[in-house]
Image 1 (cartoon, chains in turn yellow, blue):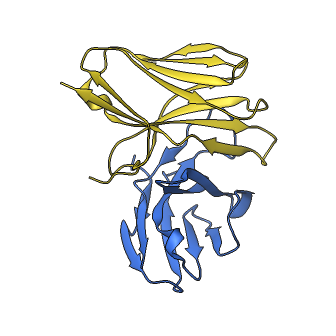
Image 2: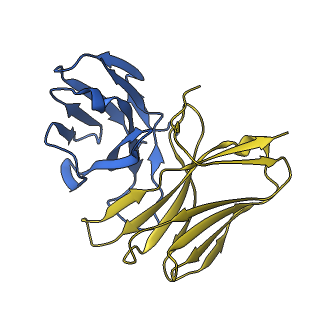
Length: 114
Length: 115
């Protein structure tokens, strides 16, 4: 398959462990944050999002934490499975009607070892 | 429901040429956005189209342009190709224009190599 992350931070975990992927964002005016998963040869896939008026949001096996004080976002994956192996991106969005700006992080390559 | 489709999947061009990429959004989706993905810069927003009008634009030179048709299909064009334009070009669609909390769905991308 294709590799789109030749210069990415990497995280390697054992199957069944919990994974934590971190992301620092730059703009305190960002009001919406999204995590995407990108498997080799595919486009990014939405995982979970969070608005800036929240500090935690949970999905199925995933939790996103937002710390606006230090402008930090994390994605926690519980009981990581081999199918979770992918590149994970965070994205920040600043609203403003149609003139929003969506900025993506460089991504983290997660490898799950069986 | 079929997902976002992009054609071609792979393309090789030489410097100075121009290229047109095509994107068909999910049926019923009216917003189409384009992104460039490279190992060095990651995912970067190019532009968004809604109802045949460009609604938002990223920081790319004028060589990068696009359009949207009445059936919501979109094309992007890159003229006078440079080596640095080699990238994966991704298209994403969503139902409406630029709303928070609305999920956008990505296509598999077109891999462009400029020689």
